[in-house]
Image 1 (tube, rainbow, N blue to C red):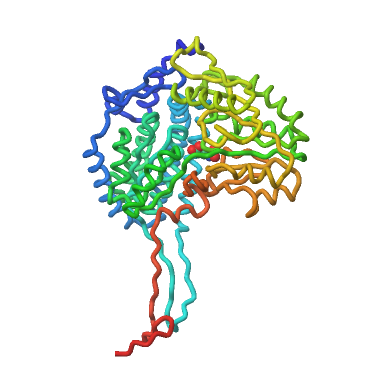
Image 2 (image 1 turned 90 degrees about the vertical axis):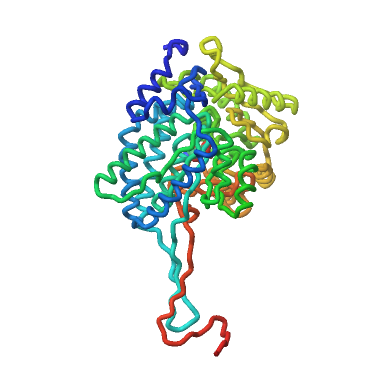
Length: 512
Ligand code: UN1
């Protein structure tokens, strides 16, 4: 089916109706949404005023006050039901992700799977929100920590993972006893509406089964930057988890710091892989191809810099170029296509600008051109670009959210580690090697400085079980697995005296 004959607005409407979203939520408003598959409009959402946003947050705070009293394993039951509803909605929500973001089918479905996985994780976690008991220096005393719910958790998400990132945050925040308020990207509000409707279904079941849950436990703020600012500045929001560009983080971070609110920032990545002399090149080729071209280069974890040892360069790079030339680009909902569109025209223009800047620095470019323009003049499909660079300079040290892979030759391992870490961002990284010393060094204190460091797999496609996030300009936040839940709770240290005397710490005497 050609792109011109697609009716994506109708397809989106069918899915939204099936998932329980009323047409008034996405018709007749002021926020226009376009599908990057064709560039055509698929919705026009009513936007909230700042005042309405304030009252949504106020209501969420009230919900928090009730929800924090529900035992955590019971809160976990709500998330179990959410996972259940997401399983039932997987095909529809996955398709809507493809329509709204342009992800290929398996990645749209994978995104919903990521939501299901974090729900499973959070259900187990709801019985494991434990603190330590710590040896005290005083007799007949006990010292311990307890973890308590925090309040309203604000979630600001980006277009590229329009629903999974909400789920990472919301599933944990809710089992931890918080209420959530979500400001999705202006580019992807339809999948947010659908997710909210799925959550409401789970909540209804929870209440029908005798669970106690307040209204407004999870709310959505549809609107632009001003609405995001209301969330960031609201005194009843003790934590904001924000995913997006470093520029966004620079705006959000200081505003939160000013009122001593917590921040989980997931910002830009400029992820690299080092291909060493002993790398399994077949495996490397596949790892690099997915990490660099998958999601049309629009993941925070996308592979953007490739350092190839000079002994394998002439073997690997021509094969990689061939893969780039033959990769199937087009309608992401058609099986077999591996690269869908860029999100919009601005993204395409940024990509072209970066390619021009790389050329000016001596870069040799393969690919990068616009394709399928005749089929869909308002959609921006590109052939992923390989840019062979003489050195790490110019656009290579920036994050351009598009499929550009900068390839550089190296000969010395220590020097390449320095280059690897020589960018402002620090999200994800990989090494492809069968040399144990190199692998261990890469993940050691003097190796990769990123939040994620992999061996023989690419930097993208992390599982939810690990903590997700990065260092330096990536923002330092951690979400998802491991003990990331601690960021969504407040810790209290409790000292209990079960004796009849009052020994003071540090031997202090104060006898009255
Ligand atoms: C993002 O790009 O915002 O590791 C997150 C990955 C995914 C999440 C990416 N699990 O690529």
